[in-house]
Length: 191
Image (cartoon, rainbow, N blue to C red; front, side):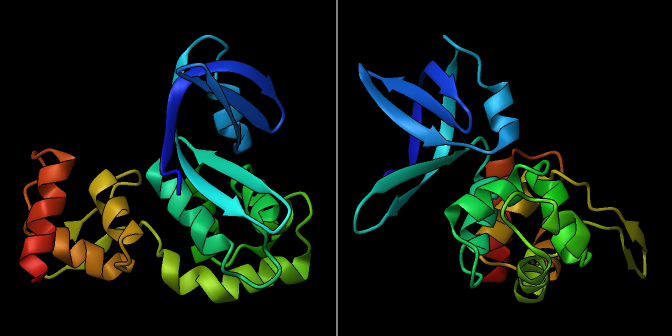
Protein backbone atom coordinates (compact mmCIF):
# COMPACT_ATOMS: atom_id res chain seq x y z
CA UNK A 1 0.00 0.00 0.00
CA UNK A 2 1.33 3.42 -0.93
CA UNK A 3 0.24 5.88 1.78
CA UNK A 4 1.63 9.08 0.28
CA UNK A 5 3.81 10.35 -2.54
CA UNK A 6 6.13 13.31 -2.08
CA UNK A 7 8.25 14.68 -4.90
CA UNK A 8 8.49 17.13 -7.78
CA UNK A 9 5.69 17.68 -10.30
CA UNK A 10 7.20 16.42 -13.57
CA UNK A 11 4.11 16.47 -15.81
CA UNK A 12 0.42 17.29 -15.70
CA UNK A 13 -2.46 16.05 -17.82
CA UNK A 14 -6.00 16.27 -16.51
CA UNK A 15 -6.80 14.60 -14.10
CA UNK A 16 -3.30 13.21 -13.47
CA UNK A 17 -0.08 14.60 -12.10
CA UNK A 18 3.23 12.78 -12.55
CA UNK A 19 5.23 13.08 -9.33
CA UNK A 20 8.95 12.39 -9.68
CA UNK A 21 10.19 10.64 -6.54
CA UNK A 22 13.94 10.00 -6.82
CA UNK A 23 13.79 9.44 -10.60
CA UNK A 24 10.65 7.29 -10.45
CA UNK A 25 7.50 8.91 -11.84
CA UNK A 26 4.21 8.09 -10.11
CA UNK A 27 1.03 8.91 -11.99
CA UNK A 28 -1.44 10.20 -9.43
CA UNK A 29 -5.04 11.04 -10.32
CA UNK A 30 -6.13 14.06 -8.29
CA UNK A 31 -9.24 16.22 -7.80
CA UNK A 32 -9.47 19.34 -9.95
CA UNK A 33 -8.49 21.67 -7.08
CA UNK A 34 -5.28 19.75 -6.35
CA UNK A 35 -4.53 19.55 -10.09
CA UNK A 36 -4.75 23.33 -10.40
CA UNK A 37 -2.51 23.86 -7.34
CA UNK A 38 0.21 21.51 -8.65
CA UNK A 39 2.88 23.56 -10.40
CA UNK A 40 5.46 22.01 -12.72
CA UNK A 41 8.86 21.78 -11.03
CA UNK A 42 7.45 22.39 -7.53
CA UNK A 43 7.46 19.89 -4.67
CA UNK A 44 4.11 18.34 -3.74
CA UNK A 45 2.81 15.76 -1.30
CA UNK A 46 -0.29 13.72 -1.97
CA UNK A 47 -1.95 11.33 0.47
CA UNK A 48 -2.74 8.40 -1.78
CA UNK A 49 -5.27 5.65 -2.18
CA UNK A 50 -3.82 2.67 -4.06
CA UNK A 51 -6.66 1.14 -6.08
CA UNK A 52 -5.89 -2.39 -7.28
CA UNK A 53 -8.05 -4.21 -9.80
CA UNK A 54 -7.45 -7.41 -11.68
CA UNK A 55 -6.15 -5.63 -14.77
CA UNK A 56 -4.78 -2.34 -13.42
CA UNK A 57 -3.41 -0.40 -10.49
CA UNK A 58 -4.12 3.30 -9.97
CA UNK A 59 -3.06 5.92 -7.46
CA UNK A 60 -5.54 8.57 -6.38
CA UNK A 61 -4.00 11.48 -4.49
CA UNK A 62 -5.20 14.28 -2.24
CA UNK A 63 -3.43 17.26 -0.72
CA UNK A 64 -5.17 16.69 2.63
CA UNK A 65 -5.78 13.60 4.72
CA UNK A 66 -9.40 14.69 5.25
CA UNK A 67 -9.99 14.60 1.46
CA UNK A 68 -8.48 11.12 1.24
CA UNK A 69 -10.72 9.86 4.05
CA UNK A 70 -13.78 11.38 2.37
CA UNK A 71 -12.75 9.65 -0.88
CA UNK A 72 -12.51 6.34 1.00
CA UNK A 73 -16.02 6.90 2.38
CA UNK A 74 -17.39 7.78 -1.05
CA UNK A 75 -16.14 4.56 -2.67
CA UNK A 76 -18.01 2.51 -0.05
CA UNK A 77 -21.29 3.71 -1.59
CA UNK A 78 -22.78 1.24 -4.06
CA UNK A 79 -22.33 2.57 -7.59
CA UNK A 80 -19.56 5.02 -6.69
CA UNK A 81 -16.18 3.92 -7.96
CA UNK A 82 -12.89 5.78 -7.63
CA UNK A 83 -13.45 7.91 -10.75
CA UNK A 84 -16.92 9.02 -9.60
CA UNK A 85 -15.58 9.74 -6.10
CA UNK A 86 -12.78 11.82 -7.65
CA UNK A 87 -15.37 13.70 -9.74
CA UNK A 88 -17.40 14.43 -6.59
CA UNK A 89 -14.30 15.73 -4.79
CA UNK A 90 -13.52 17.88 -7.84
CA UNK A 91 -16.69 19.89 -7.15
CA UNK A 92 -14.92 21.89 -4.43
CA UNK A 93 -12.86 21.70 -1.26
CA UNK A 94 -13.39 18.53 0.79
CA UNK A 95 -15.13 20.61 3.49
CA UNK A 96 -17.61 21.94 0.91
CA UNK A 97 -18.34 18.44 -0.37
CA UNK A 98 -18.65 17.09 3.16
CA UNK A 99 -21.10 19.85 4.12
CA UNK A 100 -23.13 19.24 0.94
CA UNK A 101 -23.45 15.57 1.86
CA UNK A 102 -24.35 16.38 5.47
CA UNK A 103 -26.97 18.93 4.29
CA UNK A 104 -28.51 16.45 1.84
CA UNK A 105 -27.68 18.61 -1.19
CA UNK A 106 -28.22 16.01 -3.94
CA UNK A 107 -28.20 18.72 -6.61
CA UNK A 108 -24.62 19.66 -5.73
CA UNK A 109 -23.40 16.04 -5.70
CA UNK A 110 -25.24 15.26 -8.98
CA UNK A 111 -23.19 17.99 -10.73
CA UNK A 112 -20.17 15.65 -10.67
CA UNK A 113 -19.29 14.08 -14.00
CA UNK A 114 -20.74 10.58 -14.25
CA UNK A 115 -22.89 10.94 -11.12
CA UNK A 116 -26.63 10.92 -11.66
CA UNK A 117 -29.45 11.90 -9.35
CA UNK A 118 -29.99 8.36 -8.00
CA UNK A 119 -26.30 7.93 -7.20
CA UNK A 120 -26.21 11.36 -5.54
CA UNK A 121 -29.20 10.37 -3.41
CA UNK A 122 -27.48 7.12 -2.44
CA UNK A 123 -24.36 9.08 -1.40
CA UNK A 124 -26.51 11.33 0.81
CA UNK A 125 -28.42 8.43 2.39
CA UNK A 126 -25.31 6.33 3.03
CA UNK A 127 -22.93 9.03 4.21
CA UNK A 128 -24.85 11.98 5.69
CA UNK A 129 -24.62 10.58 9.22
CA UNK A 130 -20.95 9.61 8.78
CA UNK A 131 -19.54 12.90 7.55
CA UNK A 132 -21.13 15.30 10.05
CA UNK A 133 -21.58 19.01 9.52
CA UNK A 134 -19.37 21.81 10.79
CA UNK A 135 -21.78 24.17 12.53
CA UNK A 136 -22.01 26.10 15.78
CA UNK A 137 -23.25 24.02 18.68
CA UNK A 138 -24.98 25.59 21.67
CA UNK A 139 -23.85 24.69 25.18
CA UNK A 140 -25.33 25.77 28.50
CA UNK A 141 -22.34 28.03 29.13
CA UNK A 142 -22.62 29.78 25.74
CA UNK A 143 -22.00 28.94 22.13
CA UNK A 144 -18.92 27.09 20.97
CA UNK A 145 -18.30 27.66 17.28
CA UNK A 146 -16.76 24.85 15.29
CA UNK A 147 -14.50 26.42 12.74
CA UNK A 148 -14.55 24.77 9.32
CA UNK A 149 -11.07 23.49 8.63
CA UNK A 150 -10.26 22.60 12.26
CA UNK A 151 -7.55 20.02 11.55
CA UNK A 152 -7.91 18.28 14.92
CA UNK A 153 -11.65 17.89 14.39
CA UNK A 154 -11.11 16.60 10.84
CA UNK A 155 -8.47 14.16 12.05
CA UNK A 156 -10.75 12.71 14.71
CA UNK A 157 -13.52 12.33 12.14
CA UNK A 158 -11.05 10.65 9.78
CA UNK A 159 -10.31 8.21 12.62
CA UNK A 160 -14.00 7.27 12.73
CA UNK A 161 -15.50 9.70 15.26
CA UNK A 162 -18.77 11.30 14.23
CA UNK A 163 -18.97 15.09 14.44
CA UNK A 164 -20.61 15.22 17.87
CA UNK A 165 -18.16 12.76 19.46
CA UNK A 166 -15.17 14.57 17.92
CA UNK A 167 -16.45 17.92 19.24
CA UNK A 168 -17.04 16.43 22.68
CA UNK A 169 -13.53 14.98 22.74
CA UNK A 170 -12.02 18.38 21.83
CA UNK A 171 -14.27 20.40 24.13
CA UNK A 172 -11.86 20.55 27.09
CA UNK A 173 -8.68 20.67 24.99
CA UNK A 174 -7.10 24.15 24.70
CA UNK A 175 -7.26 25.53 21.14
CA UNK A 176 -3.80 27.12 21.38
CA UNK A 177 -2.03 23.73 21.35
CA UNK A 178 -0.61 22.21 18.17
CA UNK A 179 -2.95 20.02 16.14
CA UNK A 180 -1.04 16.88 17.13
CA UNK A 181 -1.22 17.76 20.83
CA UNK A 182 -4.95 18.53 20.60
CA UNK A 183 -5.59 15.16 18.95
CA UNK A 184 -3.49 13.31 21.52
CA UNK A 185 -5.24 14.98 24.45
CA UNK A 186 -8.68 14.37 22.90
CA UNK A 187 -7.92 10.69 22.38
CA UNK A 188 -6.61 10.31 25.93
CA UNK A 189 -9.71 11.99 27.35
CA UNK A 190 -11.89 9.39 25.61
CA UNK A 191 -10.06 6.34 26.94
